[in-house]
Length: 227
Image (cartoon, rainbow, N blue to C red):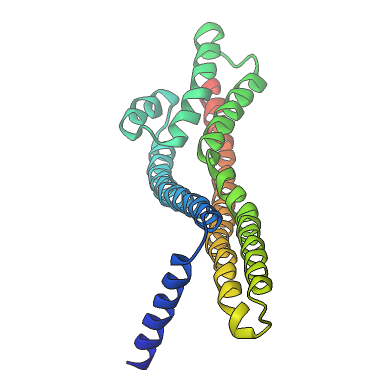
């Protein structure tokens, strides 16, 4: 009960301090709130996207390894769209089928590899989209909060000089109010930094998965050409 009472008292004090803020304080807090909300939306969307991609890629790889020919994989790929690996397969299959259809053999393996790499880059770019916003939030939010704190401290000392009092009780509330901006800036920045690094690791794992699939694809292409 004491813990709940203390938390409620702290929340009330914070709301009271915010309620006595200036237009600049509200502007800073509103900017930080926008950063935080947008970052949260990106985090939720990216978590869902990476999770779906991982599951669908795993299913497609199993089907790919069971198939004997590129044509069989191409037929099965329709049921796995929009899996990222299907898009990479399409990029490589288009170039490989052209060579096998026109020449009945592979005349330029590098062209197939480049097509696969283009597909890999396109998919990685798609999953990288908006991650820079998390990096921006992580790096900029503390400074925005610090800016709000500096403005609040300037205001507190200005009022202190006008009142002609030098006691801590006179300047303390104003400084406490000013420090809220820094706290909110950190609240916005810390989760953004954590998830930016987390998604960066997932993106690297995804890139490794795409590269491994490209090697398996080239192996199947060479088997198909030699058949």
